[in-house]
Length: 397
Image (cartoon, rainbow, N blue to C red; front, side, top):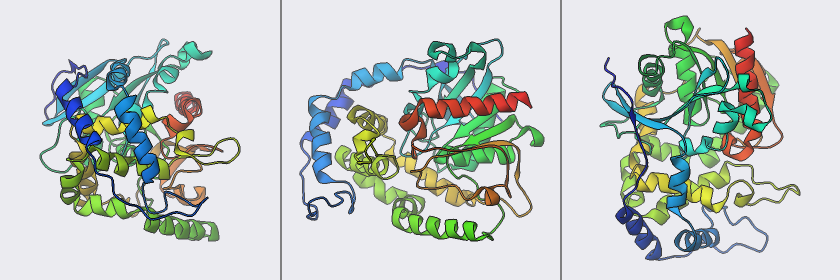
């Protein structure tokens, strides 16, 4: 095992990098898409070209990366090397006399930017009418091969990342125990942390909180409710899982187009923000900008572009494949306290509680009326409150 001392880091992208991206966006040769009847779903075949043209026009004329960069540099961030893997992370000390360390892990096609609207609420609740003693200390790392973390030489998946994160928390930052949280890949990494690196197994995780289904319990659907969930989940995966199969099997082939085309990468990423989010307004009308602003979408895309990490980020899927998947072994479970947050438009929906209980020691289960895959970005204070409630429940045990 080898770890280095954290070194302060600041994002400062060379102007030439931004200029090259803008030039490629401006030079993109638009093509055709199927005609859609009036009132039809313009995203049915993939990313809507009308919206992409609108987004790219805004990208060139109004979007300001330097403004986004200033926001991304708002919180203290560092780089450290753990077992030859360079890790970028944000580290925000919480208010109160004894703030609980909380490790939060993002997923694909996201980044630590997903959490920026909840950092202050979680670390300093007194600024929002709460109690300073409820503040938590946040550690927000970028996954290996993502954004400002280093690019691995070969694919690394959630199981290996869980081991890195436990070393980051304990050996680098000195937190003997901590709570882990995650959605998307973060839910799988966090589940592996609870599974392999809990305080019950010599690690530092004393509880985990998930907003997406992570490791699969060692059980088959038995009740009618469980079987209905399995059928729905299977159909959803058939409709939405093509990206996963490609990125898990042949990510390098995909990279040749995406690494050279900012518009192509944006279309690939934005389609997921559209498909996996809660786009409903108060009247039930759906539009992607009911969930995210153009600036949020473009910053999410630009983080991949300015760091040239679209390729290595997709390696993470292959990494899980090579690690053996995401199923718990028969007769095993996650025995530390677990919190589950169910958002209605999450596309990888949780199984019924009866099935989850067969693999997780659940002490908190909440279902919400609004929100989707990018829960922190979409629901903000709702997400923050749920995490804060779980942390308090764990500390009370």
